[in-house]
Image 1 (spheres, rainbow, N blue to C red):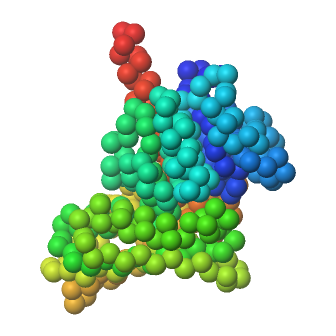
Image 2 (cartoon, rainbow, N blue to C red; image 1 turned 180 degrees about the vertical axis):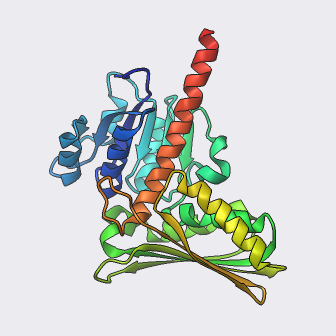
Length: 297
């Protein structure tokens, strides 16, 4: 049920991403978490969601489809293969489906770049954690300079990479590359993902190398700082750790620390994609509320 007029939200998936999403939704002034759905009642995430006071189900997408009161927004935190089925089933409803898998089924959204393009309903894709960290920086630089080649190297701690993500490593790389091409216009793009077994766990890091003409240290740094500030507005743990320009090359590295909720500090990969998804849903909720007010005025 809607509380205080807020849209009701369901989360598909009870892994690391799903439970953190639920915790973030519970803190939101614009969203109401009505359900966390998994596929196995023994999943620890379902118990954790129940401890937060959220209704849970082990019936997966069926529990969303058969809900007595339809949901307004559904987050899909399962895997790319499952999302294709979920998109087909949920696409018959007038909901906003926010996809946190690298499926490339829906419209790719990076909040600080094209976050105003979220449709009233339909399927939007949050690209990947590496995409959410890299695209704002790369988009800002390529708006000012001609770039011919981009390489994006993402490093995530093994403890922060769950089973669903490990099933989708190829999709992760392909989707990240496609997002960089789409948002920068650069055809020569290479993405690499490293899953680090290091102890203590490695902080989530994305390193970007750009090759092009006229790359200027001052303008690149200004563009990077402005883009970083936009991301920090919703992902406070995002920080630029390096920015070097020389001889037609620019090297930019960012690190993301998780800021609380139910994730350890090193799991910035999960924090940034979840924070971006919440930003999209909250903007959608605010727009829907404004439209409703206009209709009743």
